[in-house]
Image (cartoon, rainbow, N blue to C red):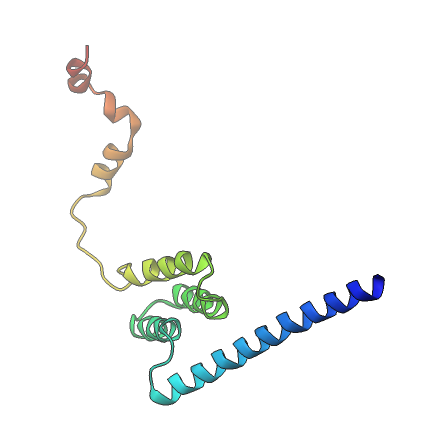
Length: 131
């Protein structure tokens, strides 16, 4: 009885192993064919596109290093991992920030201090507006 169970278990393992091996080999062959055709899979193209955008964005040193590190993490993950969307959104957010653009200052420090001061919310004019 024990040997019968062992034979069934061994057979089931071999069957799963062969299926997984064949599947892996077919996927690798498909990747090679897509690379030869210049198509590649969508995930790889997205990673390459993001890398090009990072290089072209003119980011400062630290944000660029962070973006490239996250891109490397993204590249090592399987395409269907839940973190892929989060990392992709994070890198897109880094790229969307205006790192090299600035606007002229329209208000002085005193105006900012008045806006940020919590006591300025309760001036005499605003107190009269609420019963």
